[in-house]
Length: 370
Image (cartoon, rainbow, N blue to C red; front, side, top):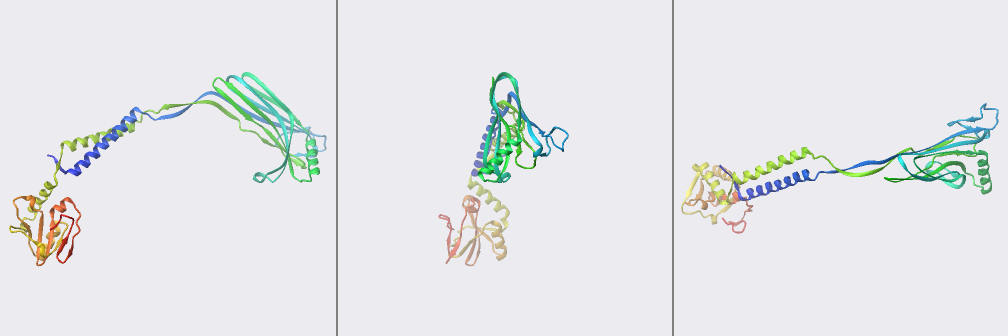
């Protein structure tokens, strides 16, 4: 037994099932044959790049300290300080030999400034070369640089006082001692370039001070190769798309073999037979025709509504008799100069009709006169 559907609904379901079948077929094919690619990094050459600065403060003979020097992280009395020894270290270590070259130098930079942090304003700067630029070049997997410098604190304090005296500008002063290192390593996997500058900062022209270290973060670097590798097929999505495809194919088959398109008129006849069966004892067939042109007509939305009206005014439901069922599509309840009408054809086709009355005349869609 086939399910009867109107042509429009059956066609709509066919189109939907066809589109779903095509969409899920494409998604399933694309998932299986075109896997997703992800980027994967591979290290070709690894290396470590590190720098450090250490210092020790050496003292003049004094009545306070029994030792000749003080270590890091203490407070230092300016009058007792003779010089500061700074030891800079730099190391580059690669996993394989490479052509490593570069240069380094040690600079002491004096600065006059006002404010702190974001409000820091530099008024003047003066660099002093301590260790001139030195170059290096090796064929190895590492380079290690160790360099000692000695800072005579009184000389820099005296220079800062001279600048203040001559310029008549009062400012805070500090001395930054740093080692600039520039390195290039030409490996068989590519070129590496590194720059670093470990430093210490010493306040000048104050009675006592502490020293701040500014050390760049040690770095573990690598020359990397980025490859795109396929991600394993998503079996869960393959299963989902396969099930969805199977359902859409089954829907297509069911529509093809287990449904039947019903013409609109056949649908009307089906509804008519149902009305004649359900309301047989309420209906009166009229052979000489019904002409409600001279009465006020009101259209109702359903046969049930017409039955309610017939019950209310205790009138029969009339229809014009015909051997051809296709000609029977209107039912009436007459009440003197008023007629209530149910249009089976219009209701079945779900056409929208607006009915108004004006001196007994009826208006509807073109060609839809009662």
